[in-house]
Length: 98
Image (cartoon, helix red, strand yellow):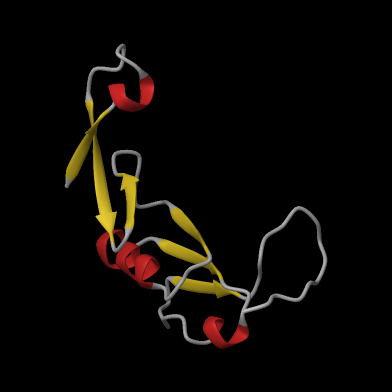
């Protein structure tokens, strides 16, 4: 696990290192995580981040993936809940150009 100098984010008054973990290409602050959390993975790409979070922490993953072809290719796991949705500022259906 790496850490970041919190003064880079919060100014010189913050004088501690914050533990940072990485799974695949994503970094996250590790310390507030606990076993009761669920993760919302918007976009979900190929599901590797969600799989990594399940393997490392046992979290429940909600993975939003609006394209049926890619949605159907997401990992199958009891803690991995793919959702065939996209998020926006209104409820509607739109065409997505790929």
